[in-house]
Structures are given as C-alpha cells and as structure tokens.
Image 1 (cartoon, rainbow, N blue to C red):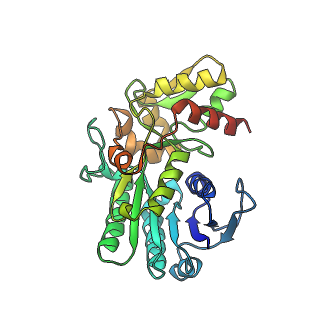
Image 2 (spheres, rainbow, N blue to C red):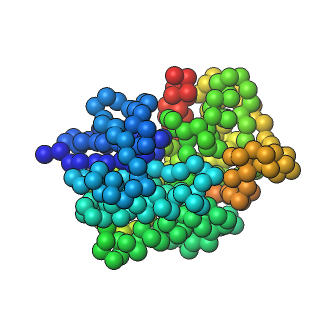
Length: 311
C-alpha cells in the first residue's frame, strides 16, 4: 500500500521535495497551495486548494498522511505577521493526525557567526526580525516534539540555487542576466567563501528525513557540494557551463543602502547583509555521517539550472 505524502507549498522547495518523492516506489504525493495552480507539476501529482492558515482545513487535508512537508511561506516582507500563524496552523493540524512533520528552514536563527563555520549545534543569536521569527518558530516545533504532540524533523539549507529558484543570491539576477548577455548582478564581498545549497538536494534531504525515524526531534544541515566556494568562483562555473565569459557587476555597499530604501526585496535583505560581509560556510557533517552525502556536484547542479532557465 502506498504511503501518503502531503506537501504544503508548490514553490521551488515544495517541487524539489515532490521530485525526490516521485523517485521512490509506492508513494502517493499531494501538493497544497491556495490557488490550486499546478505550474511545473506533473500530471500524476495531485494539487489541491487549501488554506494552510486554517487549522481545521490542515487537519482535514492531512488526515490520512504518513508524512507532511512544510515548504510554504508568506511573502518575504510579511514574515513577522504571517509566518508564525501559518506554521502554527500546520503544526496543530498535523498533530491531530499523528503524521510526521518535516520542515524546511534556512539559517537565519544563527545570526551573525562572525565567519565561524555554521554547525547545527550553534546557539541561536538571531539578527533582526527574520532571524527572530525563524528562531521562535523552530523553538515551537521542537517543543511540540518534546511534548509528544507531533513527530518533527527539520532540514536547513543555505542560499538556494536550482530549478525554479528566482529570488536568491544565485537566482535570476545571475542565471537569467548571464543568459541575456548581461553581467551577473550581486552584492557583498564576492571573494569570500559562501555556501550555496542546490534546491534538489534540499528536497532529497527532506524526503530522507521523512523516511528515517532517527531523524526526528532535531535539525539537520543539508549537504552542500564545495561549501567553501566563493560567489565569484560560482559565477565563473556558471559562465563555463554557458560557454561565455564571466562578467560580474558588484553593487557597492553605499549604493545597496540607498537603493534598498526604495526597493522592497533589497530593503528586506538589509538585516541579513552580514551573510555577505564575512565567510559563510555551512557544516553538514552530521547529516552525512548518518544518512550519506547526497550533494549534487556543483557543475551538474549548474547545468540543470541553466537548462531550466533556458526553458
């Protein structure tokens, strides 16, 4: 009998989990979003409309689920008001049905580590609103697990690149600009190491955490190929895959500060700029030791991403 897997969110992370699950046998996948739209989702995957802020609706959707994946999030500038109630509703709805809950997170809760390698055991020292929101939601998840309310596992990744990823350091302002013959547009100190997480590796990691009971009750860092690569080196590898010259336009800090006063996405990133001023290297050794190194070689991930943007 097929196991039932419910994914909240049909964005890049949700679709990466879906792709990982479809590789497995005897798995039934259902994705949930507010619109019911299925852009980029294969016909054999069910997509249903559902309000994840409605705890009763979540309970109904997940009533037969074996594993639920929380990949949904509100608009970037609505985190403080909308993210905690979204995740609380999913947590409470899933807890009523005794399914496992696997949650995708970033690294904001650690705050400014001053260049220290980011291990999964670092204390939370959030910097700014988004880090505080993330740390609070993580504490809620782990407290619920410890109380026996729900079985939780958490996957954490660095900045995304990959199929479907647009709003990221290595998103459309790099891949799409370069395909259009423009320089890659970035900001920060691009010759410092900065770990990049391939979105399909994140999805595979979440699928593994949903399969393995020993993953429950804690967070895990998703494996990343070449975690000490710099942004400049990464862009050079993209250019090589495209068969073009690597050209980079780096926004000066004073220009970033000025433009961010008026540009919504840049304004939201101001509190996170510390990530680009010091080395930002993620350690995934605990995941690798327990579940294996699932990271996709960077050149393969880049080729897949270039193909997606070309399509």
